[in-house]
Length: 161
Image (tube, rainbow, N blue to C red; front, side, top):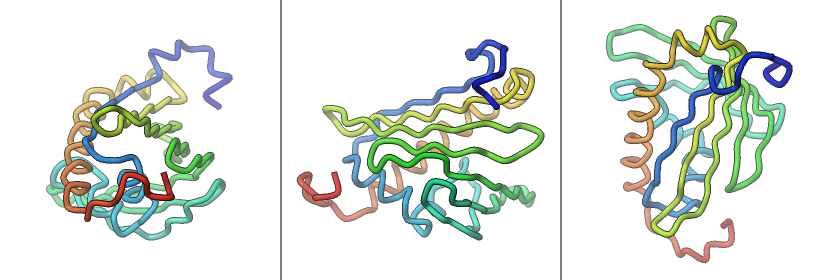
């Protein structure tokens, strides 16, 4: 597992961060709801077909990402930790580039700071996809912001905060 890997953490991780001008409860809602998640998950031009979404520790998330070029990318993940409105940790189950992803949602003055930290099992695997992933994560954040902007506004004292 990642924790036992002797390689440098910096060589195995990709961190993407964005201040999203939306309340944390909006961002949490578009992740925990698979219908919303399918609307924004993936880089620009991709669509997502959800197959299974069991949002609990030990639950499985299976989906296929469809590239604008016609390729299909099946994905399977296992949720490891869920701290409502704060953090989601899942394991990406792909032998060619296995990683653990931590999504954090931190309140900020003008919205929510969203951080995605991908920790790969091997530095070599991380290096192979780093350039693509950094750009894809930015495109994914753009899609997230666009989707959240379409949601009805809620009171900032929402009980789910």
